[in-house]
Length: 431
Ligand SMILES: [Zn+2]
Image (tube, rainbow, N blue to C red; front, side, top):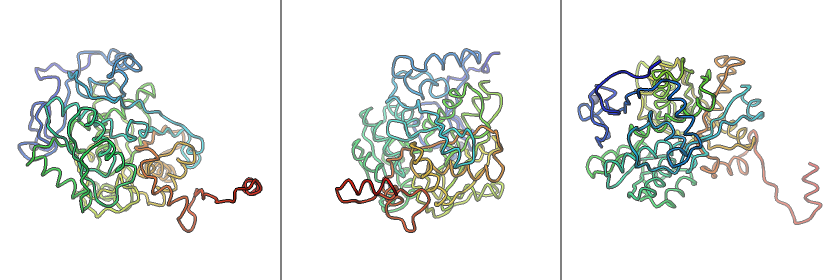
């Protein structure tokens, strides 16, 4: 079988997902010049058979050199072909974890956790950022910027530092988790605390991009989506290209939902897989415009004033809406919302299994439990839940949950203060 289609196009180009207008791969504008729609990167399939593509991906795994060491650049043909000056930490190569305690808690036997918190700055954002900053250097950007709930800021700060390009990050003055803010400062980004919410930050940085020539590395940046696709490609590779029945992921700004849909679409088109898993996008109930719209068959786009403990998905007006709708429709997917209590209980279960994740990550595990209880996930089906960030991203919520919250929530592990005597230790051991 031969992959690909004969065409005289270049290897890669950008096209507007709203009006179809095409532009060259090095066009730095964040939106379509025609209609203001979001841009998408397209790659010509290489003239290789399925087996040749898979052999190439397999041989690079654990190979020498920066590109081979990266779980993003291993899939370069599907990410950003033809570029050799790559800004790679490296990143990716995140594990698929199985823990009996999490299987029991969720009621999903064999539940696999794809833990993106193992990336260099502790979140999946590094996969998109290595591609975005590589592209920034390729087009000679003088400065890069993003709006962020925190993880993107931390990642941009780290990769911009590596590329030696000045970085500007805009985060809400209130409600950014401590670990993420600390990272942005440490990696040297100019960090602006905006008096407003994430949606205000997003508007402002888009203006800065238009008026001040800052290269925009928000989630709407199409090159970041290309990097995030590799979460799916890597997990498929880890499963020997056996397609799971479900992939469950947290959903806020909908960048990952879009990226996953694109990855699956392309993997099938390139002949790497022969069917699609179902995507389950899980929102926090206080920030669930996409879940509301799904319940209405996506008849209209919704916005809400977002409020949830899961700050990474506290987004009321998701940027990647249309692409995410397509991902859900094409994969026969579902969108659901879980309460903050369910998220924190799931997080306590993941944490207590010795795995750990940030609150937004746990939405996927809470969602898997809900889908199993409702019978959507059936016994014996294979399920991968995505954990998007590291447990230390949000130490504030951890300490509040375990040490302070009244009444004591499920899985709370209260610290015990004692006098410095052996009998006190003995008393605790017996309790
Ligand atoms: Zn357009």
